[in-house]
Structures are given as structure tokens and as C-alpha cells.
Length: 219
Image (tube, one colour):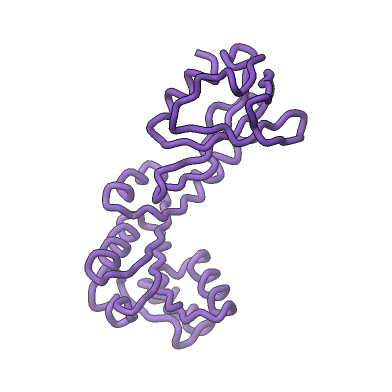
């Protein structure tokens, strides 16, 4: 694959190094001159200078033949612009964007950038995952498939406590995947009985999340 990476910070630099070792053709674009000089010493001709929000910089980097564009700068606006231009103007089949501030995620969604990575959101989800009685936590967001995988704890006040999975009135567009109790997980089937303290994983369409909460979590 030919992969164009925009942003030569630690993420962009490590991606470049790893993808090159995997045998892919990579170009790394970095706008900061001092940073570019350091990257050029490491990667030589693989690195190109310039502001990737400028069309001529993208074209010089070969965006028209790229199989994948990855925008990982520290500026969400730049990442949106680069991915949107790559996809809509140059027909790049796949784009991936870094989301520095999770509050900006709706802006990426609005312009159709479905493959995004947010370190902040991921770490927050992991922290919530470790809380004994955590609220519903999104573990995996499959935007392109319009699905998400979530996890939540069954509390003592949950309407689902003591019920079998087959007795639950779950939304049509949701399914329970697994139930973890005392550190052991099992696939959720109709005969699985839920108990306070259980960690339940489910797959669902995002717009039925509130309905699922009503069925499984305390009011």
C-alpha cells in the first residue's frame, strides 16, 4: 500500500517507522521546519515539508495515488480538512483521523470521517471500565457498520437483576454478548441469569442505547 501520513509528531513518526518495516510505501508530511529537519535525518526522502491543508503540498506528496491517508497532527481542524480533501477531492479510498479533543468528534462525523482515533476517549473508557459499578461504557465504536459494543455493570437496583436473558425485553436492534462474573466470562444465552455485580457486554445500534439502559440499569 501507499500510505500518506500527515503530522510528524511521536504518533506520525512511529507509524512511519512501523509501516516501512512492514514493507509499505510511506510519505510523511510535516509542517514545522525544525521537526521536519529531525525527521529528515531519520527517514531521509520519505519526509516532505509543508502544510498539508494546502492542495499543492498534498499533490506533491502523491495524494492522488494514495491507498490510505492518515492525519495525526495535534490540530483537529487540520486533520478534518486533510481527510475531507483527500476523500472528496482526490478519491482516496480510506482516511483515518486523530481526534485530539473528544468534544470535536461530532465535527468528524458530520463530514463523514468515520475512522477516527481518540487517545483521550480511549483512556477515559478504560478508566470507566475499571470502576466497580460503572455506567454504560462504549468499548468499540463501529461507525461504518452503525454498531457499537458497550459494557455496563448490573447493579443491585437494576430491573434485570435476577432475571434470565430470555426474560429481558431488550430492544430489537441489540444483543447481549457476554456476562462476566468473578473474573470469568461466558457467552450470554437465554438461560444465563443476571446478578448484581455482573459485567455485561452488548452489541447494539447507537440509537437504542437509552432504551437498553432502561431495561438493564437502575433508574
